[in-house]
Image (cartoon, rainbow, N blue to C red):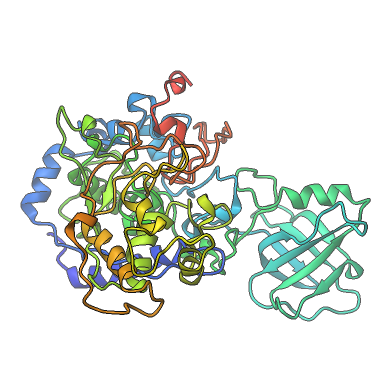
Amino acid sequence: MRRTSTDAFVLKTCAFIALALTAVGGACTTPPPVRMNPVIPTPPERDRETAAMYPTLTELYQGAQGIYRGCGPNGNVCHNARQYPNLNSLGAITLSINQPCNQLQDDPSRMDDWCERQGDTVRIGNQRIELGYIQRLSDATETMGSRWLIAIQGELPMLGENTGISIIRVREGRSDDYLIGFDREHLSTDPMRPGALIAQVDLDEEYKERILARAGIPAESNAIQFGDPNRNGVYGRALGNALIVPGHPERSYLIRRLIDPTAGPLMPLANCCFWSKPSLRAMWCWIAGLRPDGSNAMAPIDYAMCPDGPVESVQYPTPGPMCESAGLCPVRATNAIPDEATWANVYNNVLVTRCGGSGCHRGGDTAGNLDLGSEDAAYNQIVRAMPARITAGNAATSPFYQRLTQPCAMAASCRRMPLGQPSLPANELSVVARWIEGGARRDGMLTPDVMIPDAMIAPEAGPDVVTDTGVPTDARETDTGVIIDTGVIVDTGVAMDSGVGMDASAADAAGSMDAAGE
């Protein structure tokens, strides 16, 4: 009997969307929610068509619009044995069940909340508290050594005169592994940081300096592990998400990278002509029907009991001989946004969705010195920047708006944004233009009825400087935020690379042929 509790599932999925969008905030703030389409119940006849195409994972993997051709090593790009997750075989996919995402991320600050793992334990006296993160406060070259902030979950307990701390790794069935420790005379507190200690490392303690410098790198299993590596206050392990969560496609990072533009560039990044909405539905239903241990991964997909979903507003190009040459990759979101020409609308529904989710303009490394990680920071850097990015009242002469509509000639790397992706839709460009024309106000438009001539709105088009795969060639400004290949092999027997969850490296996604045979 087909599941029909649509209302309950809508509530559940809405909670998932709120959680997904909470997970991608910057270091200190969380982007506001992005408007997404509601769950649309899937007609039984549509599922019958999908079931005919993809009765099992095998057909979904091998299909003309399937995992191998859309996301796997087709054309020597994307998720072959050099990319994480590895999708170059059916066995590699099943090995991803219940596994954490971002396993080979080298930059803790870029870790998505969904992919955070259990942090190591800080033992303070007789109390044990999860470690949030460790941050250098001063350089080791200083005459007194270096100082490190050790942030924990919750508030810091009272320290006695002889209270020291140690960081340990707790493993089931084994004795606790001691990693590093500090005595009381090397510890201090900061009233401005109630959940943190300041640890002093003397100049002659080079071993401690090395341990702390390598702390938090998820790709290094022996390094100290953080519970909140991106430092936003969310301890993601408690969210219960993973790369593939059996029975819960709404908590599976694999699905999220296919539908949520705030998590990074939508996948498939390069082979979107070989992926489709029926493929997406089949993957959703396959995960929904998995047993907790994944033991039925190769059994028929149970479409009859599959919940409605996923929530998505994704535009795929029409498959066919001319698809790849049409320049319509990568996949793009088609979220409908409000028409109000206000800063809140510009930031929440244009900048966050199109420019901030990839990491290119969010966090420590911000292309073009433009940080969109928070609404306040974005407004200051766009409107109050020197030299000016905005000419209030005149969108046509505003460099910020020009970068959204056309390449600029001041430098070879000065290209239309978002870099390597299709131009913003006309309705979104109109919102930006009318906001600027109205005075680029923080609290809304100066005059609510400003009209922008149609000639100012660039037509929707593919990217101006981009390969057929839809990946930018300029290494200095990319929207992928992808980490360089580490070449790490984990003990599952599956070679995994440093892509961010579903991300392929920029070089591989651009169709680099040197990946062949790796």
